[in-house]
Image (cartoon, rainbow, N blue to C red; front, side, top):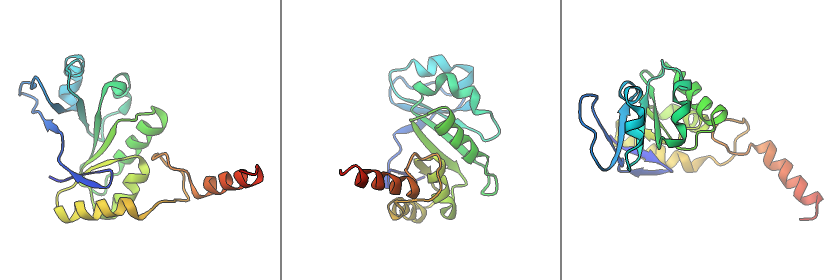
Length: 171
């Protein structure tokens, strides 16, 4: 499954580890929420990076104590009609200041990609290579937005205000 991050199609450095499988001694791992919550400290004490696949029906507050040690939080879209992962992404970025990789997984569709970016997602698991290529191009297409959101970009209004401030200060 292609992974798009930073406008590029990349090989996923994280290996999905089944709930009943042993954790590898080395290498980045991605585990389910169930496994993570059963043994979070052991997973996070490994020398390699760790990530969790978080379903959209679980409260992200459960992740807060671990956010500074999680390299990836993969939020799941079980259906393109189910947008709860958007809210989870905004909470993680805006309320809890999560700065690690925020990955969209599951039903990640082309026509929702810009909305996912704006909610704070920065990596996307897609099913088709053609979608991965379209996602990589879309990242580069938009540079300014009017609405403030979870991706941390300045809005068009804030850019204008900065420009006016610079001009009035003679900078």
